[in-house]
Image (cartoon, rainbow, N blue to C red):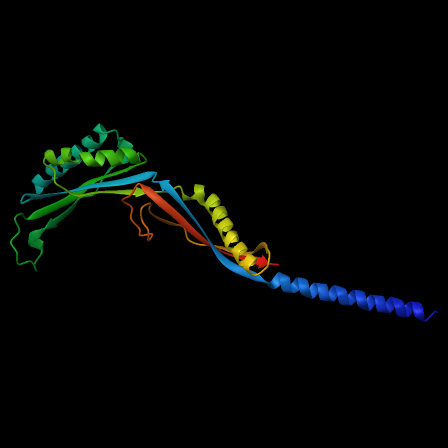
Amino acid sequence: MSYFIPSLILSLGIVSSSYILRNSIENYRNFGRFVEVKGLDEKIVKANVANWELNFTVVGDDLKKLYPQISFAQNKIIEFLKENGFTEEEIEKQSISINDAKANAYSTERPSARFTANSGINLKTNKVDKVNTVVQKTGAVIESGIVLNTNHVKYLFTDLNTIKPDMLARATENAREAANTFAKNSNSHVGSIKKATQGLFTISPASSENNDYDNGSILKKVRVVTTVEFFIN
């Protein structure tokens, strides 16, 4: 009898150890199973900043006479912008660049004027709707004798950080839905996240289907794709 009890205890210990080991191996195998899926989220937003460039060119043979013409053009454009609701703080004069045709030794053409001066006005504002309306009125600038060779507005969305958390959460949830579909087909269950990689946020026109970059549209489509690994049980 004295030999039986220790033997019984030893046998129970072996059985218990075998069960724990087998269960640990099974848990390890389940822990090592995972699926990698991608999650997508898109959001339509409105630009919150507008950069408007109004550039012009002045030509002439007398350099001294060019500067008053440049000043006149700049002041007319500034006057036009202020009349339409923009402030001094939103308006900036561009630097002046001058080209001397006689300095171009390789040119065989006789220019109509010796000097060509380029300058303009930059407007940076958060009044994007106003810009979108006023840009249609630039004929008033042209009527004053100023030829605009660039009249381009860039609409930008700069508040990306304010929408990032929600978009990442939705993209991750979208990834989990994809993982659930996989798990259902394999009679498995989706567990916790093993690893998540945030993709790049892209901003394109809302109407774009191939995410081409274009800053001429007020409405933007923000898009993010995440890569997530889920444990599968």
